[in-house]
Image 1 (cartoon, helix red, strand yellow):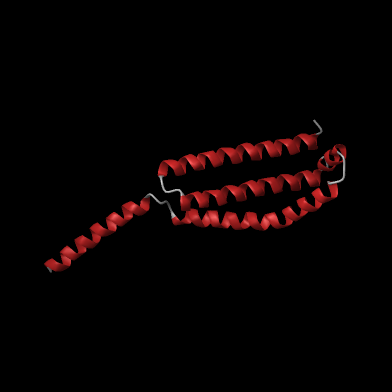
Image 2 (cartoon, rainbow, N blue to C red):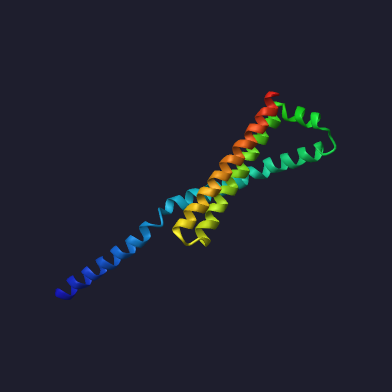
Length: 138
């Protein structure tokens, strides 16, 4: 009986050490959410990207006023905003997963994530603001 009790205590101590190491890594559900977001943004980027590329090819020979008038219409403005948001969301999730895989120091990981988060927020906000400025005609 004594061997069973000591074996149980050793197993409990080992499991507690493993649990301490795992707790710092976060929940497994967070990774699944990021994986799903990466896939959904990739699926959204297929039609939105095709629309954007075809539109840019059509506007390649146009002057600035024609392009501004095109972006002043509701449908192109909305689809372009959706494209921009999908691109930045996809890039953000992808960069976070790359950092999680290859940056091993917690401080560097935090700094890289804050830098990417700030850059994505700034660039996405500026892009949407520029589109809305053209759409509203200001």
